[in-house]
Length: 501
Image (spheres, one colour):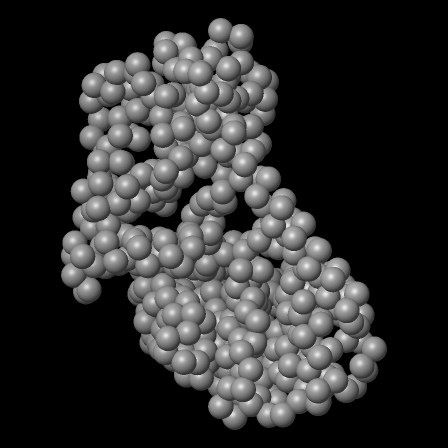
């Protein structure tokens, strides 16, 4: 055990050393030495006078509220110096910025491969500068400064005449700021921004949405996931006693997992065999190890086992919520976060984060689906019931459940698609076509409805559809599509931008 602790301490020291070295490299790269702009080996005056190589703006900036502005200049040595400015048009102005230097070929490859989702368009240099400066001015008026690294990329803009651009840019969303907290925004940043907005607009005037991180592309050390996993607080109210040997094994496994040895942690716990199931701490440690291995389904299963043994296990509920978000299981995430608030202490960090998440999700639901959280959960329950009934071929009962869904949210294409399937199975051709037409009216590019309409058109009114004789029909995929449809807004929110630093 002593050797294991020494190894863990050494690993932690190495990790801290790597982080410190990374920060120092960045500082050295951005340092200004002897009047020269270090990253580009030229003076500021030379940088500012360098001809503009490219000025690019993401078409998505005013559609989704976020996107890049890039200004690139050709240096005397033929290298391309670029300033990347991440613009949050809804609230923050310049949310991030950084300078870089590449060869002309590397610059072109970077634009073609890294920013394809933003649909970059060429603009005049004046247009690019005016957009950046107007975004900063908007945010400053809200009391929000541009990202600190803006000053490192700012030399790319100097010497460009912004007055050449006559276009007027409109910031905010529907006339008001909307803060969409990014997947990598820290809780400190979220609190700071929302406090500024409350100071300006009052507590009821703040619109805030949590962009949920659902993509599994964190950094090599697990990045965003590790930050969300919490060490358990002991001796909570109602916590059952744990065998000392199991508690020690769980603690060792958590330390191993935290140090990047999740596989070793799982191997150690596996040696305990069924004894693991006797301890909420041991089950929790298994969940954490699976979380760090990016195995969300397994992690949720173990967190559930821990919660079954200790219903008030705040950290297990919290981490379970995180995994449900990664799995796009929004209703389960909401319920788990609510348990964190229910069982946690008002002043602990997990409760604060859970409240923020719930607030952001509720706002996102209102913006994207015109539902509040409770309405969403009711709709989800109706969905699940309808799907179960459809799988059991109880078409009439499924219709009632789907109608209950539509009473809460009529503008959901998969619900209408599922309704059409029920009608078709009951031989109600006209009703099935009407349901599919409504799905396409709401979303003209909804492929399942367009595909299924051809099959329904071939039906005979009054004769139930026999899916065995219509092998091309896509109704068989409809329940799964329906099951996840009300969570799709999370995906849309997550894909507004991937502003990973």
